[in-house]
Length: 242
Ligand code: 9D3
Image (cartoon, rainbow, N blue to C red; front, side, top):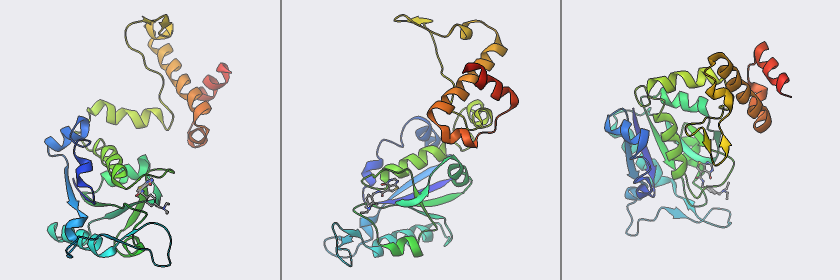
């Protein structure tokens, strides 16, 4: 997979994508992440990338020309005019695991990071294929959002994570929160690990974990509970706890 990231601040990406799963995936050539400085696509003496908003108002707006040129340069380098191009913006579709899986199936795509107070709307209308937001809060730019998306997608690539984890997790938790985990020591500062986990009774442990997942999802994320598909056994585990 190849991901081209267009940004005014390529140095922000020094570090975050060099470690852990993403760093290892890059070293193993499972993914090629390339950064492009949008400012390099200006042709005036002062490399101006922003301008005042038409109609007035506070702040500056990222000009369309350098963004269009930066995307077109990448598309030409890749020899394809149809590389999926995603604009990161607070107005975009909410990023979730389903969108991550969809992007993970692409051979390549381009991420455009906005900054300043916004970006000329013609980028969203005539250059980008999709607009994505990572959540309902304001960031100072799309860079951190791009890092979130790259991290999330790279760990879905075959070979990026130990196969056990990637295969088991989604199917097993079925949209519920995870159960609590513990490791040694069995007692730390007077806080004991739940005794069921030390019992060696694997079916009891499995039931307890499932029950914990159900209970904490119901309590903390009722929105996920509405979408979850529950078995009769699940309903029993939920009701016996209350
Ligand atoms: C909606 C706010 N805009 C109206 C004045 C200004 C604005 C603020 C912050 C425009 C862009 C930004 C920078 N944010 C992103 O580029 C961004 C983002 C985000 O802020 N939250 C969640 N996901 C994303 S993806 C890109």
